[in-house]
Length: 60
Image 1 (spheres, rainbow, N blue to C red):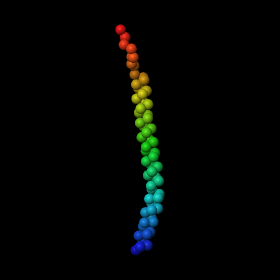
Image 2 (tube, rainbow, N blue to C red):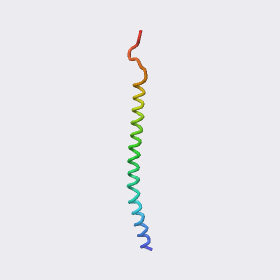
Image 3 (cartoon, helix red, strand yellow):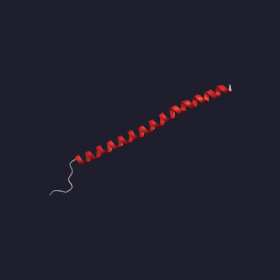
């Protein structure tokens, strides 16, 4: 019975050793994707603001 528990624990450690780096990489990629989307939205808003007609000086 102890051998079976040791085998199960060993399999669990192998599984976690394989899965944890994948999860960490997925989180890192997700963070970069979110940052890129926010940057794209900000650049689009800045471009729209620059393209919008606006007058800095009032006309008489």
